Length: 175
Image 1 (cartoon, rainbow, N blue to C red):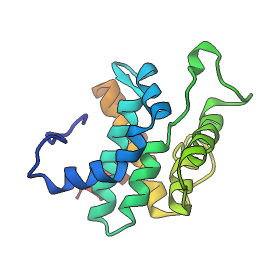
Image 2: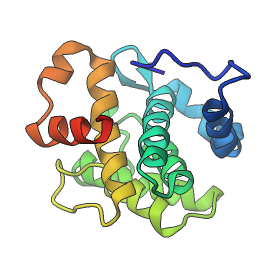
Image 3: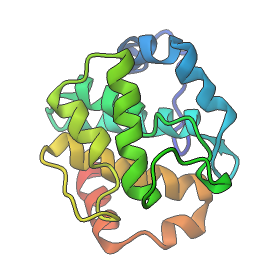
Image 4: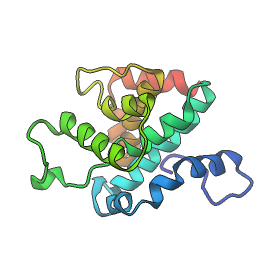
């Protein structure tokens, strides 16, 4: 995981084992595995990005006493779309920041049971780039984890350019 010293191979790490158990059916899906073929941020695939966001969501929601299982699954599915917007492959017209959560939700709903928290995490993860706010704390955490991981994935300059909203939210969650 980007920015983390933990791995999923340590059999004594109970949180890592639980995390893998929560997302194992998602990563086992052949369609989901196709995200390994799409670059998301510099040097990271969309698959790795979703894994990074899900890991931090899991840790932050569990520490906060929230529904970490649904939030983790929603985070894992938040960018579950199989097209390259940079090549004009977007299946629906509109701004990518508004379209891709809907495509991700349709894909998630096609293969998995999506509860209200997962729905919120997937559809509202682009806040504040879009005007629609998450309605659950889990949704806010996925949105923040998404920006946090994107910043780490693009390097120090990405973190430097995070909005004050995201920086403050990360500070509150990690204290």
